[in-house]
Image (tube, rainbow, N blue to C red; front, side, top):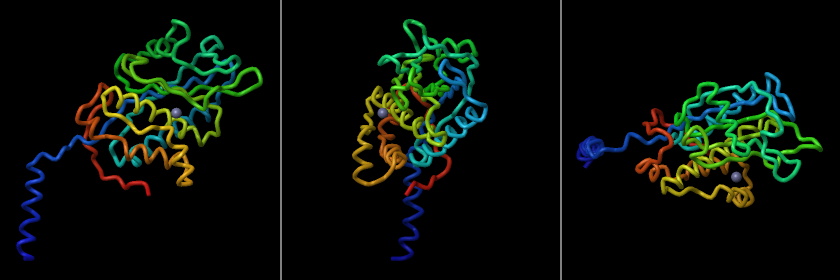
Length: 247
Ligand SMILES: [Zn+2]
């Protein structure tokens, strides 16, 4: 019996390999992270800009680990040295402002990025962080917000985070909006996606934080459905290393 088992194990390993175990099990998204260090409301210091890069790097590591290697981000960074005037912001409701990618018919963020040489259809997500301070005369209506795919620079989804929150929490705002972008990609490709705002119930039930919920979404997203019939977003790759799941 024992020798038969020893024989069987290598034979079945060969059979599995021969049956074509999928090697492209990872989705890699190209993300352009943009910082506007100066707006009508505030100016960010060099350290605050550096903090954005650190927070995004932390998120990049988090999403790969939490998705068990199914999602990886290829991040490029750019700073737009332009003072963003009040008129470039979406004001809704009165006195509350969010940096949408366009105002009226002006695609202002895309115009800035094109002027800096960013080409169309290279990125899956454009993620903007902008200097902000809440005052009586102007506040932010959202923690952060996003708009689905096919929004900017061709196919990319758009998200924007005001740099007004505790610096070490910017990553969680970015991650939540990034998940909305992913939701938009999966839904467009017919793959479905977990309902992101069920996190409140999840947190209440299990007494866990936002990161635990984001990790749950990342580990339970229908990766195989998207990867076997992918949309226009991301490239497929083989995850090179086995990644320890979050406990
Ligand atoms: Zn949301």
